[in-house]
Length: 61
Image (cartoon, rainbow, N blue to C red; front, top):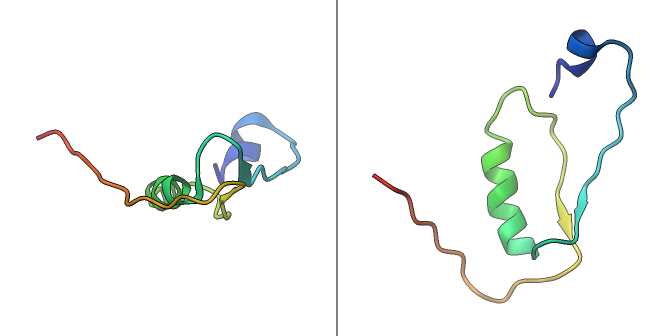
């Protein structure tokens, strides 16, 4: 988060911006959700694989 150094002391930032776990379409949805947190560091999320199917979201009521 943006306040890591204030909470835990001196630190260095290392952005891990590539995922090997899922394709770019899932990454786009996940990153859009994560970036809604105002305290989250802004960074891109890259994927090595390209998705070719639509993403569906199911929300519980």
